[in-house]
Image 1 (cartoon, rainbow over the protein chains, first blue to last red):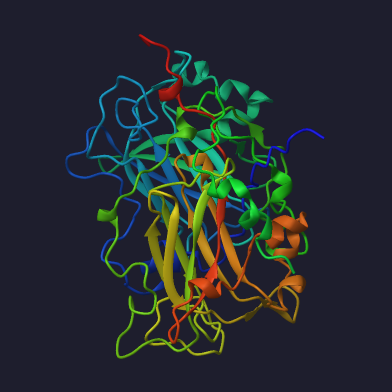
Image 2 (cartoon, rainbow over the protein chains, first blue to last red):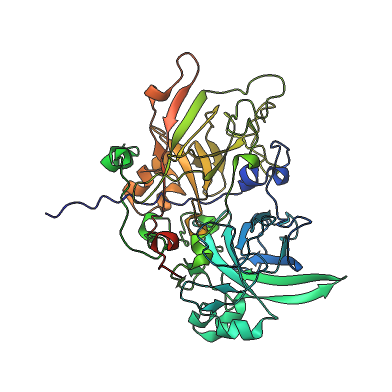
Length: 208
Length: 262
């Protein structure tokens, strides 16, 4: 017998359940407990970059929006740098931007929104340029293990066409499920997205 | 029933030198999905309409996945890990006082330092303080039911609370959740993000729970069950339970592996 490797095993995921707000967004559960709360606003007045609103819904297999879903997003700053020591790029950090936020969907409409900035393109470790994108993580009652997807931007057509991750998606017709659509509304830039959990337009989810 | 015994017995937890694979790209170990409930698990009815049906697209980890949000003590308040006091209005909450402690580790056995752990639960009667919970057990005016902590340099966390009660839910007509505490854990990269639950040693509802039994691996299920830890209890005050959480392991990072001049 060879020596045992003895790696530990990852702890099993469990659904976030219908009451996920208590722990992660207590104000939505209906009470105020923490001095400081996390939110869906990623920017401060001093954050660098173009202000954008992300707005979307998560749709179940019957076409109904999830009204108890929680999304988290993780993204680079306006010049493509993540606020984390493992990002070794030479792009400038922005101390006014953590790059992470969380939001619960509206209990009536299912709408999820984030106030953030548009990230810059990211140079990966092999020197490839990655189109600007935002990582999205989705948990809810009925979702047994968090779902990972990405949002790209509709006005970045050339960058999207060259993006190494989008180009992995086959059949190519599914790539559009990852692209948020830019509109302007009352002077604000809004990117709209729909995450379909099932059906012919099922969103591409990643095993990251 | 075994309760986290494999993790607790692992000798590498006490090794002074962490196991460090010699080369790597900073990516996380491939997730072993046989340790997790499948997305589509018909015994847990809510999963039927909420489970993707296409295959997941496997991505080698890039900087987008090996990085993740960094939190600090500035994000927390002084009572955030004390659920007995953090919502108390005119006294202590009703219920069995308990301490919950453990370590956040990765699959190599290394502690995950300075990572955010969030937890939430029902009160001692099995009722959540949530606008959507209508169970007839009463709200406890002195119990909010949530808290958070940062792990220390060795990955250790702890908090104080009351033991949650079991409660009924609409799956079958007589489905009950075993008592549990929800955990949300970050790790160092966004690909380690995990939500799980801690259950309590000896709970007879565990083997009949429609959610827990979606986990295909018996050992993986038992690793969600925290043993009573009398040595960590506070005499004449609180019992203690120990719950270790294992996140995905990580190959060495860009930084350690960086080519000179790059």
